[in-house]
Image (cartoon, rainbow, N blue to C red; front, side, top):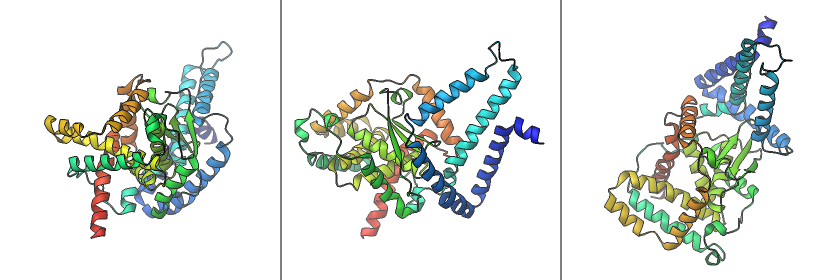
Length: 359
């Protein structure tokens, strides 16, 4: 029995982790008590403390370790007499261990009822008066833009220096999630990855590392995408799994800031999301009318952000999207990558709920 356990440790560990996931899915009470209020906060505390001393981003260290393992284990060296059959068993164990550790360090959070439910709003797909919301958001964005110190002395917002620290952004996200019962005590180590464009070439702006608890953002981005993406990844670090809800958390966090650059980042992100809804909802003549209403300053910022991002085009954008879509669906997010677009629906639900409260 001990020999079997040693030979198939990774696969057995994955089976146990999946069994535990099923148990948490059947019992929200056990999920909350054992995981969300117990193990997960403790794990995050350890990660923040230990990996803050790591001299390079955790994903970089992981890739190095994986390559070292493959070089050591691949049965192609004369000194390595292990058969391919044994190598494949070891590889299956390794992959099983990676999958199990993912679940037991962060993946169980997909069993949570979600931010929208905790906030008391329905995650409906209903959107209404999209054009009106598009114009209102654009107007609010311009108000916040005008409040940025010396904004007119810069060619675009991409050249404006950041006025928020990482800890400021973390505290803004914490203030949004703490009242909803999220475990936010542990800090979040954030890494701005180099070489520039590393994540962009994988068709993503940022990524959360569940093994180290780090929020990773591509170093390429200017202040608006950087602030918003950092807040989005920090939301994941605090247990928000849905991409739409992480975007909505980032929106509420940035909007609550005293800093006009952060508020501009919030409204700009929402405005670009609503632009997608406009393109899906209206005929060409309406879209052209709305485009004509965009102020010149906003056009300049949008073009600058786009040019900066397009310096690094994705290597295999279709493959990256397909892998991300599969990952999300495996975790129970039925919409897959379309979940990102649900940010607009969450905004409309939140706006309706707040309008009813104000009455």
